[in-house]
Each structure stands twice: as C-alpha cells, then as structure tokens.
Length: 173
Image 1 (tube, rainbow, N blue to C red):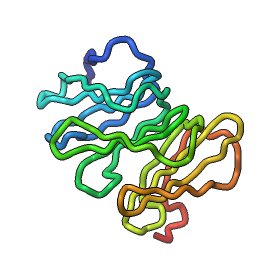
Image 2 (cartoon, rainbow, N blue to C red):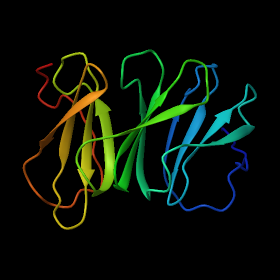
Image 3 (tube, rainbow, N blue to C red):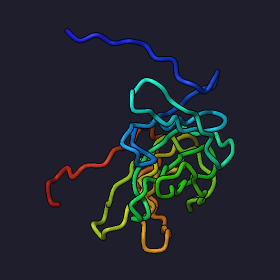
Image 4 (cartoon, rainbow, N blue to C red):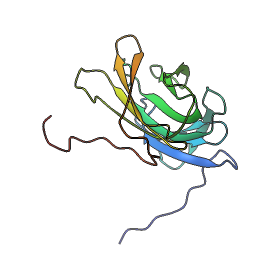
C-alpha cells in the first residue's frame, strides 16, 4: 500500500477555514491558498513538494469562508476568489509574480459560505456562484464580462447554503 508522511506548513497558529490547491505563480509547483479568519496567505510550493514559502495576501482580514482559484479575467494568470463574511473579492494575479491586486465583487456585505467558479452562461467569461448563509441572505451568480466587471443575479430560494458546486446536470451543454 501507499504511505503518507506529515509535513508541517508555515503560517503559525491561524484558524483556517478553506484551502485551494493550484500552481498560482505558474512555476510548475503546486501552491496552497489558505483562507483564514485573519490574514489569508499563499504557501508557494517548491520543486521537492515538501517545502513552502508563505506570502500574505492583500485584502485585509475579512473572515474568509471560501477560496477558489481560476483565471477569472482571462489574462493567462491564475486569480484567487475569496468568499468572506462581508465583502467578497477577487485577487488578480500577475504573470510569474507573487503579487495580487484586490478587486471588490458586487453583492454587498453578506455571510458567504462557499464559492464556485465556472462559465455558467457559456459566453467565454468566468462567472462566480456565491453561496450565502445566515439570515436567509440568498445565493447569487456574479456574471463576468470584459474589463473585470460583474453583474449580480440573485438565485431563487433563501435558505442557508453551506456548499456550492456547478455541473451540467441535464447534459445540455
């Protein structure tokens, strides 16, 4: 059988609420995006896959509940979608760098519990499905368009959501 070994990650004692794994900086090594109750971070992986360097993400302490990674603006660089208690954000990445610019998403201050990223409407732009919890805030889709802009559409139903995922359930493309 297969065996596993434990690797201690940098970052100290934080309350981690979500993680996403992707090659964020495009160097061929997997990185770990860590969403925390405080400052979020990326643990950039090395070639050996066992050591990481920690970089704090911009955007402040927003009580993150969800992280997702995708090329949101279509520039060829991976971006980080951050679902928070409060303002949700996209942290736009830059080519081969470990720096990000913060973009506030529309939708106001909500208790976001989960996010899913895909092209919902097939227009070639990435859309963000947002699951919200607490006080029947309702869920939403943020439809992406050119120029890093999004339009918000509320989804029917107002129950508390703990997880979102997107799939072509009926197979219609």
